[in-house]
Amino acid sequence: MRLDFNVLWVEDQPNNVSDQRERIASQIRKEGFRLAVRFASSVDEATGYLADDIYGDHIDLILMDYDLGPGKSGDQGLTEVRAIFPYKDLIFYSAKATADLSRMAGERNIQGLFTAYRPDLPGVVEEVFKNLVRKVLDIDHSRGIVMGATSDIDEVISVRLSKAFDDSNDEQKKITLQAIQKRLEEKREFFEESLNALKAVKHVSELIDHHGVYTSDDRFRLLQKLMKELKLHKERSGNFDGYRTKIMPKRNDLAHIRVERNGFSRKFYDRKGVELTAADMRMLRVALLEFQEILDEVFP
Image 1 (cartoon, rainbow, N blue to C red):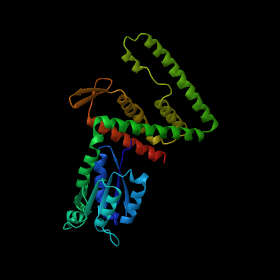
Image 2: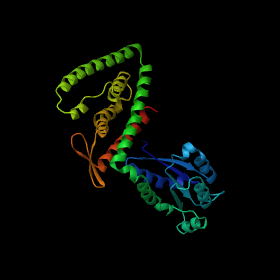
Image 3: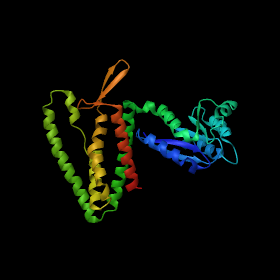
């Protein structure tokens, strides 16, 4: 699952909406999502993007300016966009407070869109955003987003681990391979202890405490060791430590949450019996988003 909120913004003068874009990005980020904008300067450019099935399917929202300079106007654009995506959410806006946008849309029989005066655009987008993602902001759906986002991070770690190993000299490769053997020996000892502990279990629920071989955490630790050996991104070592010690355990807890149902309502509890709230999930999404951006920075 992605943490990006993708917007196709049909605007021939993007500099005129830079303030609105920053405010929208800030509002969305508070919920743990990242604003991703593709500007189109004309209706034809916008419909070209929408005609691309791969790109068009990932657009969450379309913003359409009325005055697009020479060429087709925004209300003409609405007709063409609706022909491609009958149910895609649209916000039709204008820099002129006197523009009767609802009337224009009505004359073209365009239904199910929102209108806004350009200075008020961030507030309208925020409300539309909340409605669009409300279904993924509950704990159950957020659980899937978090698991998916951390899987993406795990993939980056695996790729960068291979790259760091390839960039190592012979001595550094030897140290890395020795680190793998050392970690496996530690896990062998751990498994022996787990086997002994398993012999003493009194209930099947205790089995959850004994799992894993060379896990994503092991690969992450190995990448950190290689980064240290290669003297890479020392200034970010604290961020990597924080991801492993604070974020990954919370991700792992999500695989083992307990659900209590009471009619239509549900409560979620971690392995320690602590209730998980929507605020907890929001904080976790934000933390994941921040670490993804750190990965993008250090591993472009």
